[in-house]
Length: 223
Image (cartoon, rainbow, N blue to C red; front, side):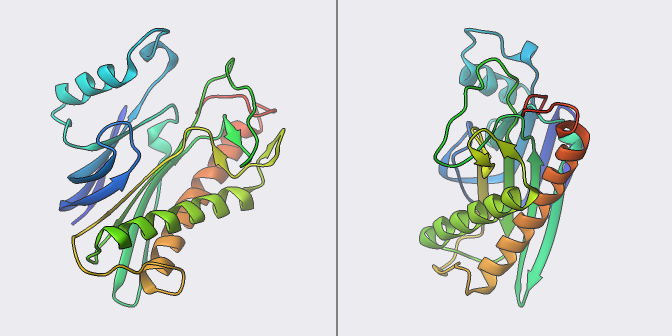
């Protein structure tokens, strides 16, 4: 049974069993095997200038016996995480997301965020059906598409236009090993993953827009 535990500054997504995970997370990126995906909330004081962030994060994870986890860093308050579970036919997708948009970007443009706190969108999605690596890659593309659609529909304005994400987003998808290699929009897998990610990310984006975006106009803020 996959469960989510909030132990701020940590958020832990227990996958229920060891399975294959694909991501570009700072800790254990690429194709790996893991039984949990974790978030670590950070503030400016945690990451002073000149710090080797990867080394610091590895040591921080090791101190919590989490070094084998796929792990994200975020400046978003992890207690504001959002989740959604969607079942389509025999397929169930469970998504957990934290959404900070203070460094939102429009695809194809790049604003100067050097003097601002950086937010990020971190998404983890777990499937209960077996996939091969090709299927996992397509699942990651569907989750990315759903993230983008949710942010576009939230209507966050940036100098380059309506935001499509942030400059530091990260997505992880997890599934048991199997033979299924198709996970596109015409499949139950694609529908379930797309709906779960869209709902969780849009919920998080709307909350950020309400709590922070109205106060920090011009896309400055915390998380």
